[in-house]
Length: 180
Image 1 (tube, rainbow, N blue to C red):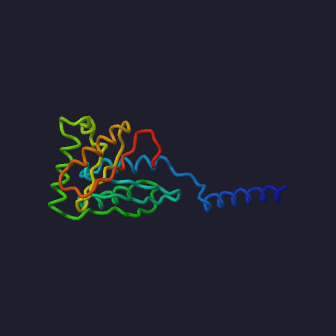
Image 2: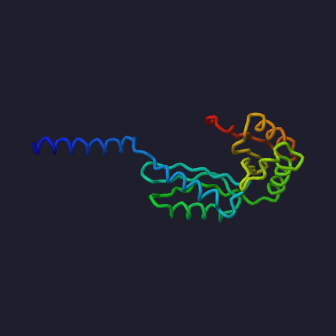
């Protein structure tokens, strides 16, 4: 009788170990929520920055994206490390190079996308606007989430009209759609 119970316990233990090593362990949704909260409430995280993350079942969090300030990169890592259940943080956030020309292009792009006469003006009223404007070496990338495909197209058309940009890449997603 004890041998049968012991066999069942060993089998259950082996199954748990197998599931964890096969990547079938569950990602803690609380950690995912807390990482997101910590990132969007960073003091200098704004429309010219883009942060994304990946949470592994073992508690490792990988941070990616582009930021204008080096302090935003270090603050993101520091805040995520403090979350209960996070065992390791891999910080792959890129700090964009200092460039007066890129700063000028950011301002022009912001006015073009979020100006009061723009149909996209409503997106500017959020704590962190949902259309992020990443400019690096004269090239712009639009990232974030919009309500519909028409808004994504409108943002792209308006961005393309900014003089001095070498290229514009549209990576906007429509709310509720799967990433492309």
